[in-house]
Image (cartoon, rainbow, N blue to C red):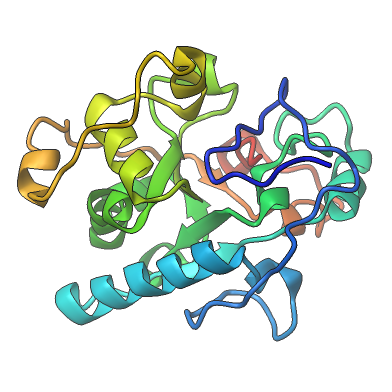
Length: 236
């Protein structure tokens, strides 16, 4: 049986078995662009509580409102989506999606129509998410400039729960989860941060991008193939 760990690495070369499913799933009390009882509203319990605290902080302190787009996605659902277009580079094969762990969440905001778009990164909501996510145990899983390492395009909306100590460490060092695992046990997660401004003092301002993406659950809603300007990113 596969052990559930918050630092678990899931990608095209580190696959989850078909039977893998979190032992428990919880719906966080946050706004969702999904109907009641939709599995996309579910997350692993610790991740659910953390995202609830993150969204609440951003709303209460900054007056900005984030929405969950897609959380948990089963192996069976991923297989169904992938089978509709197995040649697509925009939908991860079954067993390679972080959404199956219940630790990943796609996030958006009303100012971009609750879409998964690169321009989300330069909205006040997107900037606030990037700044505050590590303090609540989340990383931006697919950063710009690391596409060859992660195997996926830049996705400023995709956050992944890894616990606060590891999130702060990865954010401060600029390492991806792949690079962290490559270190093995030689580099302990020992960095501690208490000042948010210092944590991001050297971060470069994100560049705007006009590429539009869609939720994988809606990818095949239309019989018309998406154009290059509206093609969804590889959402794992």
